[in-house]
Image (cartoon, rainbow, N blue to C red):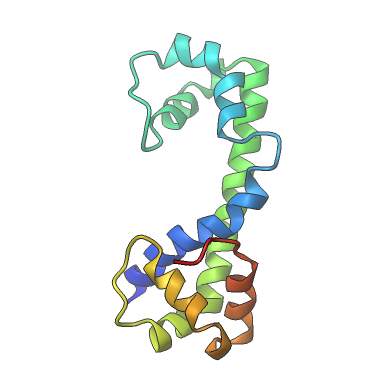
Length: 138
């Protein structure tokens, strides 16, 4: 069940914090723009996706240009905030998922949809998180 909760909150919880995280200066596009020269120099052979570019930049952090270093640091701060909020969401909603959505299949936001559908029955903390996520209804 913990894997189900973690998977659910990574999908639904990321949506919750994405609006906060990516309206800040170093969203993904800003990072790519600030680091384009560094990526070409140090990571040209890396196939983007699954964090490979970030890993490459991290491996070369002592050689990054100042704009890339700043953007990379800001992105790391955003990710720290994302993971902290996911931990908080797990704390707030794990019992509600187990109680109200245990039989729901994981994937494609189905557990989050279940939580949204069960909002009236959720604990106050979980209901507050679910209500703050602005996703279209199914």
